[in-house]
Image 1: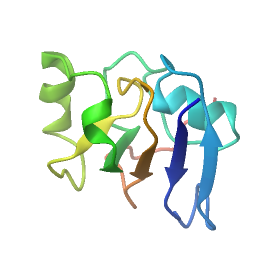
Image 2: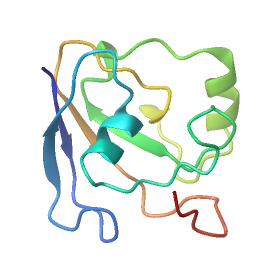
Image 3: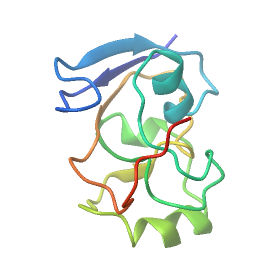
Image 4: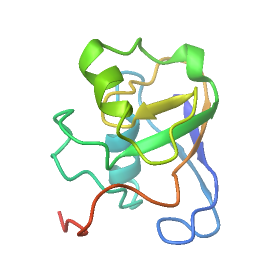
Amino acid sequence: MPVIKILPHPEYCPAGAKIEAPSGTSICEALLDNGIEIEHACDMSCACTTCHIVVREGFGSLNEMDESEEDLLDRAWGLEADSRLSCQAILAQKDVVVEIPKYSINHAKEKH
C-alpha cells in the first residue's frame, strides 16, 4: 500500500503525518479516513478547490488530470506546477508527499 506523507499544517495536522491507503483511493478520501479533516466543500465532486494540495513528491505516479480539474485549479489559492485537487488525485503504487496550502478560497468552513 502506498504511503502518503503529509507535511505539517497548522490546522489540519500540526506535526505532519504518514498514512497508508490502498491504490485507487483519492488522496482526499485517504486523509479523511485517517482523521485529517481537509476541506472538501463540494463533497469531492470536482466542483470547487477547497481540497487543493501540492504534491511535493510522487506527482507522476498519480492519475492524469482531466480538463475539469485543470480548469478549477486555475482558481486555487497558492497554485503551483504540482498542484492537484486531492479529491481527483488517485493513488497508484508509489508513495507521495503532499502539502496542504495554508489558505483556500472557501470563506466558510464546511463541517462534514
